[in-house]
Image 1: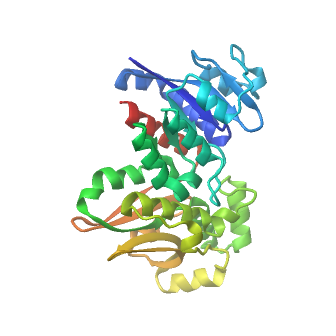
Image 2 (image 1 turned 30 degrees about the vertical axis):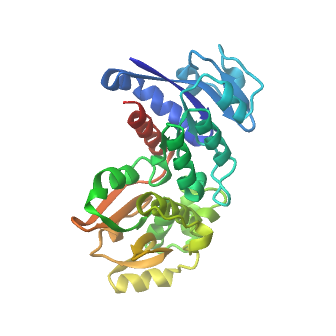
Length: 338
Protein backbone atom coordinates (compact mmCIF):
# COMPACT_ATOMS: atom_id res chain seq x y z
CA UNK A 1 0.00 0.00 0.00
CA UNK A 2 1.40 3.38 -1.03
CA UNK A 3 0.51 6.40 1.11
CA UNK A 4 0.05 9.69 -0.73
CA UNK A 5 -0.17 12.91 1.28
CA UNK A 6 -2.19 15.70 -0.33
CA UNK A 7 -2.04 19.43 0.30
CA UNK A 8 -5.06 21.39 -0.93
CA UNK A 9 -4.93 25.05 -2.00
CA UNK A 10 -8.42 26.54 -1.98
CA UNK A 11 -11.54 25.16 -0.36
CA UNK A 12 -14.58 26.44 -2.20
CA UNK A 13 -17.20 24.46 -4.05
CA UNK A 14 -14.66 22.35 -5.95
CA UNK A 15 -12.61 21.72 -2.80
CA UNK A 16 -15.64 20.40 -0.94
CA UNK A 17 -16.53 18.24 -3.91
CA UNK A 18 -12.99 16.86 -3.96
CA UNK A 19 -13.20 15.89 -0.28
CA UNK A 20 -16.60 14.29 -0.84
CA UNK A 21 -15.39 12.30 -3.85
CA UNK A 22 -12.18 11.21 -2.15
CA UNK A 23 -14.11 10.11 0.93
CA UNK A 24 -16.47 8.13 -1.29
CA UNK A 25 -13.70 6.40 -3.25
CA UNK A 26 -10.95 5.92 -0.64
CA UNK A 27 -11.68 2.23 0.02
CA UNK A 28 -12.02 1.54 -3.72
CA UNK A 29 -8.62 3.09 -4.46
CA UNK A 30 -7.02 1.10 -1.66
CA UNK A 31 -8.46 -2.13 -3.02
CA UNK A 32 -7.93 -1.60 -6.75
CA UNK A 33 -4.79 0.55 -6.91
CA UNK A 34 -3.15 -0.11 -3.53
CA UNK A 35 -3.16 3.67 -3.00
CA UNK A 36 -4.03 5.36 0.27
CA UNK A 37 -4.73 9.05 -0.33
CA UNK A 38 -5.13 11.37 2.61
CA UNK A 39 -5.25 15.13 3.00
CA UNK A 40 -2.68 16.51 5.41
CA UNK A 41 -3.15 20.26 4.83
CA UNK A 42 -5.71 22.72 3.49
CA UNK A 43 -4.99 26.40 3.05
CA UNK A 44 -7.35 29.17 1.96
CA UNK A 45 -6.95 32.88 1.44
CA UNK A 46 -9.52 33.88 4.08
CA UNK A 47 -9.63 30.98 6.55
CA UNK A 48 -5.97 30.19 7.08
CA UNK A 49 -4.50 26.71 7.24
CA UNK A 50 -5.35 23.45 8.98
CA UNK A 51 -2.80 20.65 9.21
CA UNK A 52 -2.42 17.10 10.42
CA UNK A 53 0.58 15.16 9.06
CA UNK A 54 -1.34 11.93 9.74
CA UNK A 55 -4.37 13.05 7.76
CA UNK A 56 -7.36 15.31 8.36
CA UNK A 57 -10.62 13.42 8.87
CA UNK A 58 -12.55 13.55 5.59
CA UNK A 59 -15.78 12.64 7.35
CA UNK A 60 -15.37 15.52 9.75
CA UNK A 61 -14.53 17.94 6.94
CA UNK A 62 -17.84 17.06 5.31
CA UNK A 63 -19.88 17.77 8.44
CA UNK A 64 -18.38 20.96 9.90
CA UNK A 65 -19.35 24.47 8.86
CA UNK A 66 -15.89 25.96 9.29
CA UNK A 67 -12.29 24.96 9.93
CA UNK A 68 -12.68 26.26 13.50
CA UNK A 69 -14.90 23.24 14.28
CA UNK A 70 -12.30 20.68 13.21
CA UNK A 71 -10.72 18.61 15.97
CA UNK A 72 -7.29 16.98 15.99
CA UNK A 73 -5.71 19.53 13.64
CA UNK A 74 -2.94 22.05 13.99
CA UNK A 75 -3.54 25.63 12.87
CA UNK A 76 -0.11 26.89 11.84
CA UNK A 77 0.32 30.49 10.79
CA UNK A 78 1.05 29.48 7.20
CA UNK A 79 0.11 31.24 4.01
CA UNK A 80 -0.12 29.19 0.82
CA UNK A 81 3.60 29.29 0.02
CA UNK A 82 4.51 28.34 3.60
CA UNK A 83 2.13 25.38 3.47
CA UNK A 84 3.59 24.19 0.16
CA UNK A 85 7.13 24.46 1.52
CA UNK A 86 6.64 23.14 5.07
CA UNK A 87 3.71 20.72 5.21
CA UNK A 88 4.27 16.99 4.76
CA UNK A 89 2.78 16.55 1.29
CA UNK A 90 3.59 14.56 -1.84
CA UNK A 91 1.21 16.38 -4.16
CA UNK A 92 -0.48 19.78 -4.21
CA UNK A 93 -4.07 20.05 -5.46
CA UNK A 94 -4.36 23.66 -6.66
CA UNK A 95 -8.03 24.68 -6.85
CA UNK A 96 -7.98 28.36 -5.96
CA UNK A 97 -10.04 30.93 -7.89
CA UNK A 98 -9.46 31.12 -11.63
CA UNK A 99 -7.79 34.20 -13.08
CA UNK A 100 -7.61 34.22 -16.88
CA UNK A 101 -5.98 37.65 -17.01
CA UNK A 102 -2.54 36.73 -15.61
CA UNK A 103 -3.10 33.36 -13.90
CA UNK A 104 -2.06 34.56 -10.45
CA UNK A 105 -1.77 33.60 -7.68
CA UNK A 106 -2.13 30.03 -8.95
CA UNK A 107 0.94 30.32 -11.21
CA UNK A 108 3.03 31.18 -8.15
CA UNK A 109 1.49 28.30 -6.17
CA UNK A 110 2.13 25.72 -8.89
CA UNK A 111 5.65 26.97 -9.58
CA UNK A 112 6.56 26.83 -5.89
CA UNK A 113 5.18 23.31 -5.54
CA UNK A 114 7.17 22.12 -8.55
CA UNK A 115 10.37 23.72 -7.26
CA UNK A 116 9.70 22.02 -3.91
CA UNK A 117 9.74 18.65 -5.68
CA UNK A 118 6.00 18.02 -5.40
CA UNK A 119 3.57 16.78 -8.01
CA UNK A 120 0.72 19.14 -8.87
CA UNK A 121 -2.88 18.49 -9.89
CA UNK A 122 -5.10 21.41 -10.85
CA UNK A 123 -8.45 22.27 -12.42
CA UNK A 124 -7.50 25.95 -12.47
CA UNK A 125 -7.66 27.17 -16.09
CA UNK A 126 -5.79 30.44 -15.54
CA UNK A 127 -2.21 29.22 -15.07
CA UNK A 128 -2.61 26.46 -17.65
CA UNK A 129 -4.17 28.63 -20.36
CA UNK A 130 -1.50 31.29 -19.93
CA UNK A 131 1.61 29.38 -18.85
CA UNK A 132 1.21 25.64 -19.49
CA UNK A 133 4.34 25.24 -21.59
CA UNK A 134 6.50 26.99 -18.99
CA UNK A 135 5.00 25.11 -16.05
CA UNK A 136 5.15 21.72 -17.78
CA UNK A 137 8.78 22.31 -18.78
CA UNK A 138 9.57 23.25 -15.17
CA UNK A 139 7.86 20.07 -13.95
CA UNK A 140 9.91 17.95 -16.35
CA UNK A 141 13.12 19.64 -15.20
CA UNK A 142 12.26 18.84 -11.58
CA UNK A 143 11.07 15.25 -12.25
CA UNK A 144 7.53 15.87 -11.04
CA UNK A 145 4.14 15.55 -12.73
CA UNK A 146 1.60 18.25 -13.61
CA UNK A 147 -1.99 16.98 -13.94
CA UNK A 148 -4.42 19.28 -15.77
CA UNK A 149 -7.32 17.07 -16.86
CA UNK A 150 -9.91 19.14 -15.00
CA UNK A 151 -9.14 22.34 -16.90
CA UNK A 152 -11.19 21.32 -19.98
CA UNK A 153 -14.55 19.51 -19.71
CA UNK A 154 -13.99 18.68 -16.03
CA UNK A 155 -14.19 14.93 -15.43
CA UNK A 156 -14.85 14.02 -19.06
CA UNK A 157 -11.32 12.99 -20.07
CA UNK A 158 -10.99 15.22 -23.13
CA UNK A 159 -7.27 15.95 -22.69
CA UNK A 160 -6.07 12.46 -21.81
CA UNK A 161 -8.28 11.03 -24.56
CA UNK A 162 -6.60 13.32 -27.09
CA UNK A 163 -3.00 13.17 -25.90
CA UNK A 164 -2.76 9.51 -24.93
CA UNK A 165 -5.15 7.80 -27.35
CA UNK A 166 -5.89 9.95 -30.40
CA UNK A 167 -2.53 11.64 -30.84
CA UNK A 168 -1.00 8.77 -32.86
CA UNK A 169 -3.85 9.17 -35.38
CA UNK A 170 -2.72 12.72 -36.13
CA UNK A 171 -5.01 15.41 -34.73
CA UNK A 172 -5.43 18.23 -37.24
CA UNK A 173 -8.14 20.30 -35.58
CA UNK A 174 -10.27 20.51 -32.45
CA UNK A 175 -13.63 22.20 -31.98
CA UNK A 176 -16.35 21.92 -29.42
CA UNK A 177 -18.94 23.17 -26.97
CA UNK A 178 -16.71 23.94 -24.01
CA UNK A 179 -18.94 26.01 -21.73
CA UNK A 180 -22.00 24.47 -20.07
CA UNK A 181 -23.45 27.82 -19.00
CA UNK A 182 -23.66 29.10 -22.56
CA UNK A 183 -25.02 25.81 -23.87
CA UNK A 184 -27.73 25.76 -21.19
CA UNK A 185 -28.75 29.34 -22.03
CA UNK A 186 -28.94 28.63 -25.77
CA UNK A 187 -30.98 25.48 -25.11
CA UNK A 188 -33.42 27.47 -22.94
CA UNK A 189 -33.73 30.13 -25.64
CA UNK A 190 -34.95 27.44 -28.03
CA UNK A 191 -37.99 27.17 -25.74
CA UNK A 192 -38.82 30.80 -26.51
CA UNK A 193 -37.07 32.50 -23.60
CA UNK A 194 -35.14 35.71 -24.07
CA UNK A 195 -31.43 35.77 -23.35
CA UNK A 196 -31.97 37.45 -19.96
CA UNK A 197 -34.72 35.00 -19.00
CA UNK A 198 -32.53 32.05 -19.95
CA UNK A 199 -29.62 33.51 -17.99
CA UNK A 200 -31.84 33.84 -14.91
CA UNK A 201 -32.79 30.17 -15.25
CA UNK A 202 -29.11 29.23 -15.50
CA UNK A 203 -28.39 31.14 -12.29
CA UNK A 204 -31.36 29.55 -10.52
CA UNK A 205 -30.13 26.04 -11.41
CA UNK A 206 -26.55 26.86 -10.43
CA UNK A 207 -25.17 26.73 -13.98
CA UNK A 208 -24.20 30.42 -13.98
CA UNK A 209 -22.37 32.57 -11.43
CA UNK A 210 -23.80 35.76 -9.97
CA UNK A 211 -21.38 37.51 -12.33
CA UNK A 212 -21.59 35.32 -15.47
CA UNK A 213 -19.53 37.59 -17.71
CA UNK A 214 -16.56 35.22 -18.02
CA UNK A 215 -18.88 32.53 -19.38
CA UNK A 216 -21.33 34.43 -21.57
CA UNK A 217 -18.70 36.74 -23.09
CA UNK A 218 -16.56 33.81 -24.22
CA UNK A 219 -13.50 34.21 -21.97
CA UNK A 220 -13.90 30.82 -20.29
CA UNK A 221 -14.12 29.07 -23.65
CA UNK A 222 -11.12 31.04 -24.93
CA UNK A 223 -9.10 29.84 -21.94
CA UNK A 224 -9.92 26.24 -22.80
CA UNK A 225 -8.99 26.78 -26.45
CA UNK A 226 -5.66 28.20 -25.25
CA UNK A 227 -5.07 25.00 -23.25
CA UNK A 228 -5.94 22.76 -26.20
CA UNK A 229 -3.63 24.75 -28.47
CA UNK A 230 -0.66 24.25 -26.16
CA UNK A 231 -1.35 20.62 -25.27
CA UNK A 232 -2.11 19.32 -28.75
CA UNK A 233 -0.25 21.67 -31.10
CA UNK A 234 2.47 22.94 -28.77
CA UNK A 235 1.56 26.52 -29.66
CA UNK A 236 0.78 29.25 -27.15
CA UNK A 237 -1.96 31.76 -27.86
CA UNK A 238 -3.58 33.57 -24.95
CA UNK A 239 -7.28 34.48 -24.85
CA UNK A 240 -6.36 38.14 -25.31
CA UNK A 241 -4.28 37.30 -28.38
CA UNK A 242 -6.90 35.13 -30.05
CA UNK A 243 -9.90 37.36 -29.46
CA UNK A 244 -13.27 35.87 -28.58
CA UNK A 245 -16.99 36.48 -28.88
CA UNK A 246 -19.71 35.32 -26.52
CA UNK A 247 -23.44 34.75 -26.82
CA UNK A 248 -24.80 38.02 -25.44
CA UNK A 249 -25.81 39.17 -28.91
CA UNK A 250 -27.93 36.11 -29.71
CA UNK A 251 -31.66 36.93 -29.89
CA UNK A 252 -34.82 34.84 -30.00
CA UNK A 253 -35.08 35.83 -33.66
CA UNK A 254 -31.64 34.37 -34.30
CA UNK A 255 -32.73 31.12 -32.65
CA UNK A 256 -35.83 30.93 -34.84
CA UNK A 257 -33.83 31.67 -37.99
CA UNK A 258 -31.46 28.81 -37.18
CA UNK A 259 -34.39 26.43 -36.72
CA UNK A 260 -35.68 27.29 -40.19
CA UNK A 261 -32.27 26.39 -41.62
CA UNK A 262 -32.11 23.09 -39.65
CA UNK A 263 -29.37 24.44 -37.40
CA UNK A 264 -28.80 25.30 -33.75
CA UNK A 265 -26.72 28.10 -32.30
CA UNK A 266 -23.75 26.88 -30.26
CA UNK A 267 -20.80 28.72 -28.78
CA UNK A 268 -17.92 26.95 -30.53
CA UNK A 269 -14.29 27.10 -29.51
CA UNK A 270 -11.83 25.77 -32.07
CA UNK A 271 -8.15 25.46 -32.86
CA UNK A 272 -6.40 24.07 -35.92
CA UNK A 273 -2.95 24.15 -37.40
CA UNK A 274 -2.61 25.24 -41.03
CA UNK A 275 0.95 24.79 -42.25
CA UNK A 276 2.96 26.53 -39.51
CA UNK A 277 0.16 28.73 -38.22
CA UNK A 278 -2.37 28.21 -35.44
CA UNK A 279 -5.89 29.44 -36.14
CA UNK A 280 -8.18 29.81 -33.14
CA UNK A 281 -11.79 30.90 -32.87
CA UNK A 282 -14.37 31.45 -30.15
CA UNK A 283 -17.74 32.58 -31.43
CA UNK A 284 -21.40 31.54 -31.78
CA UNK A 285 -22.01 29.38 -34.84
CA UNK A 286 -25.08 27.91 -36.50
CA UNK A 287 -24.33 24.18 -36.38
CA UNK A 288 -26.25 21.89 -38.78
CA UNK A 289 -28.46 19.32 -37.08
CA UNK A 290 -26.51 16.62 -38.91
CA UNK A 291 -23.46 17.44 -36.76
CA UNK A 292 -23.42 15.68 -33.35
CA UNK A 293 -22.56 19.01 -31.68
CA UNK A 294 -25.99 20.38 -32.60
CA UNK A 295 -27.66 17.72 -30.47
CA UNK A 296 -25.65 18.41 -27.31
CA UNK A 297 -28.07 20.35 -25.12
CA UNK A 298 -28.42 21.73 -21.62
CA UNK A 299 -25.21 22.05 -19.63
CA UNK A 300 -23.44 19.20 -21.43
CA UNK A 301 -20.15 19.74 -23.26
CA UNK A 302 -18.74 18.09 -26.36
CA UNK A 303 -15.48 18.13 -28.28
CA UNK A 304 -14.63 16.98 -31.79
CA UNK A 305 -11.17 15.93 -32.93
CA UNK A 306 -10.42 15.76 -36.65
CA UNK A 307 -7.72 13.17 -37.26
CA UNK A 308 -5.75 11.90 -40.24
CA UNK A 309 -6.53 8.22 -39.64
CA UNK A 310 -9.91 8.12 -37.89
CA UNK A 311 -11.62 11.15 -39.34
CA UNK A 312 -13.91 12.95 -36.90
CA UNK A 313 -14.15 11.67 -33.32
CA UNK A 314 -16.69 13.23 -30.94
CA UNK A 315 -16.59 13.02 -27.14
CA UNK A 316 -19.64 14.13 -25.15
CA UNK A 317 -19.90 14.52 -21.38
CA UNK A 318 -20.41 16.83 -18.43
CA UNK A 319 -18.11 19.84 -18.47
CA UNK A 320 -18.69 21.49 -15.10
CA UNK A 321 -19.84 20.85 -11.54
CA UNK A 322 -18.17 20.15 -8.22
CA UNK A 323 -18.26 16.36 -8.43
CA UNK A 324 -17.40 16.34 -12.12
CA UNK A 325 -14.33 18.49 -11.46
CA UNK A 326 -13.44 16.38 -8.43
CA UNK A 327 -13.53 13.32 -10.68
CA UNK A 328 -10.92 14.94 -12.94
CA UNK A 329 -8.64 15.71 -10.00
CA UNK A 330 -8.89 12.09 -8.86
CA UNK A 331 -8.22 10.86 -12.43
CA UNK A 332 -4.95 12.80 -12.41
CA UNK A 333 -3.96 11.54 -8.96
CA UNK A 334 -4.54 7.94 -10.00
CA UNK A 335 -2.60 8.47 -13.25
CA UNK A 336 0.38 9.90 -11.37
CA UNK A 337 0.58 7.31 -8.61
CA UNK A 338 -0.81 4.00 -9.90
